[in-house]
Length: 118
Image: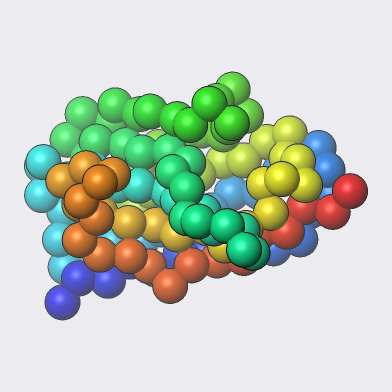
C-alpha cells in the first residue's frame, strides 16, 4: 500500500521559514517524480515544486523559485520542501504527490496546513 505522509506545516510570520517533509512508503520507482502542490481556500490546487527520484533534478513554479528548495533523502524515502522568505500568499494546504509527472499523480498525501501571517 502506497502512503505519503506530510508534516512540518504551521504558522509563520511573513519573511519566516518552514520545512515540510513527506515520507513515502510502498513505492519509489526510479521513474517516479515527487511533487509538492498547494491549495488555498477557494482556489484550485497548484504546482509548487517537483523532484525526479532517480536523478534529484528539481523544477519550481515561478512563484516560489529562489525561495523554496526541494530535495530528497533516498535512504529515508523522504522529500523535503524548505520554504524561506515566506509571504501571505504562500498560505495553503500543501500536498505531496507521486507519479510519472505532475499531470499524472497516482497518490497524494493528506496535506499539511501552512499559514503565513502578515
